[in-house]
Length: 245
Image 1 (cartoon, rainbow, N blue to C red):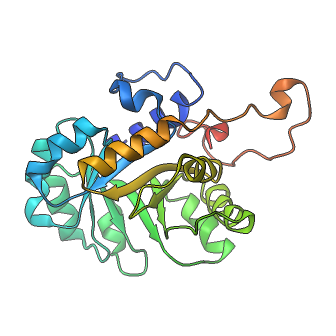
Image 2: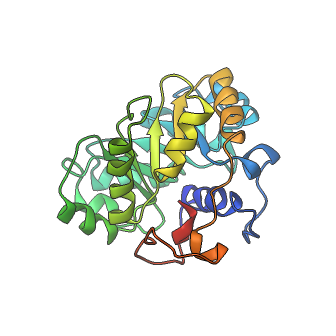
Image 3: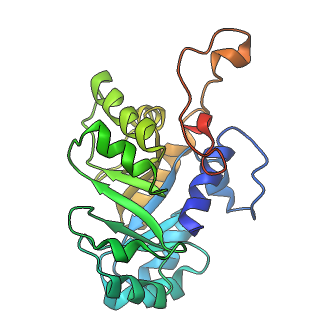
């Protein structure tokens, strides 16, 4: 299991105040409703980003991946490489990379064979329900979607939730600017478990602060003695719990 998957599980389960059974994370991350990941190719910036609250690091450069991993310690470091080959995957693993963010239309199937390398799908366009259901069998760690509009319209929220329900995977939303707490709240209710921001410590700190203000998920109605009107996610509950989104 990748460290990113563990971080997302901690965020999802911790949002309900559960005993999560993993080593405790930092005080900032343990109470936030969304994981904050930072994009950077600068190893020197990593300590400050982590101090600001970044729970994951994403790079686009093979050349600095090993240095980023060394600087990040226990924080997961992954790489976005749209067209990943089997040789690329070997380089990522050798450098200590935790996950690969890939484009399914360009990445070689052999690149995804190692079970220890986390899989994050890049999904920037609408695709069919059939294909989304097939993705569920790939046991994705997460799905990076295109930035949703702000404010989030209900139809956009339903579209995001459709991806989560059909793939049984949490969403990662890129944000060039720091969203408001209400925007993060709406994203969380759409199945978003992480927000991806530029590698600037002030932006990370602001994103973490906004995420800390997002209230915990409301209890399903069946837990309050009523009827559960929203179906739970299908899939393996040993990964991300069905009611954590």
